[in-house]
Image (cartoon, rainbow, N blue to C red; front, side):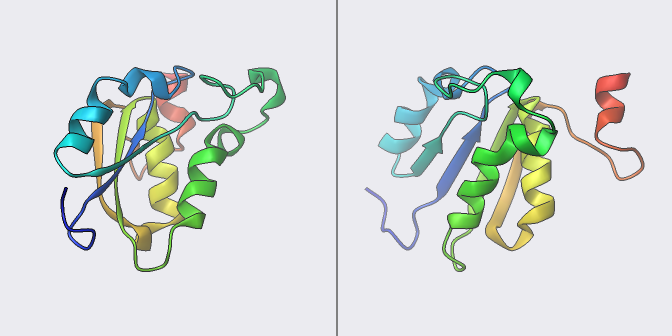
Length: 124
């Protein structure tokens, strides 16, 4: 196991409504390599019991990620990995918590630009 001070904390964010289960093969491989790995369900995804109809905003959908980021100790920086639409979720986290992010990886993911609103990609 890697030294706790050198251990990388990787946060895996799934694509639209899939849930953390989509990382089930990757998570143990990363952990076996000595990394700390967090994969959780966004709102109305996986085992989260809320329905999409209960969510009013993209921020509501992203709330589990945002709550997690807010809970990190000030000195901890994570590697965010977003898959597919999860790229939008990690972009929101990057905007709100830039000081808590070491690097962000957009894995075949939607990557917003600085010119358009985030909904631009979905509307196209």
